[in-house]
Amino acid sequence: NAGVTQTPKFRILKIGQSMTLQCTQDMNHNYMYWYRQDPGMGLKLIYYSVGAGITDKGEVPNGYNVSRSTTEDFPLRLELAAPSQTSVYFCASSTGTSNQPQHFGDGTRLSIL
Amino acid sequence: EDKVVQSPLSLVVHEGDTVTLNCSYEVTNFRSLLWYKQEKKAPTFLFMLTSSGIEKKSGRLSSILDKKELFSILNITATQTGDSAVYLCAVVPYLQGGSEKLVFGKGTKLTVNP
Image (tube, rainbow over all chains, first blue to last red; front, side, top):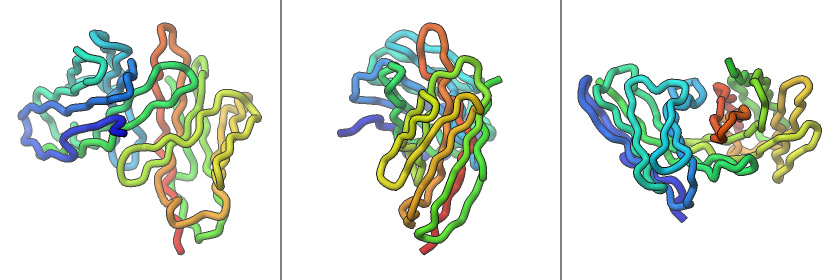
């Protein structure tokens, strides 16, 4: 009963390094989302996808890239890490129908020094 | 700009107390409002509200929506230490073409002391 799985759980990066945060779901959900959560703040949408091959920007997309080659996977890429990207990143998925909520992964805690 | 405001931001109570958490919103083309509970890790879903005046209930938790006054409340009766968490309110605006772009409030941090 995995649901939404995120890896790694935590990571420390140096400024300018790049990395990919992995997200996979086994619920056959079409819709997937990436959020970031800064201390004392709610979650802000970075990117989302309504199906394989389709992605779109959310509220705070700058500095990130995504791809969606399969229904299951939705990786988030940081190309040039900056201290402002220190945050907790959550991936979520949903069926996309109006009466079904989003399901969240356990998050990736990322620190950029 | 769509906006969700939760109050209070922080609350400390004793076991057995009843608490009310507030969520007000401004959104174009409202679709639904959701409550999540966040402990150490992932937000976990509590309620989805779409219609005014209909209470959703799960054990000691209940929630109701007022679409005229643009707010929702989450009630927790007979609180327990396990209720300690951040409670997130999120609104889903209706968007052409679908997607569920949640707009979150900052959350209410509830601490229940024994």
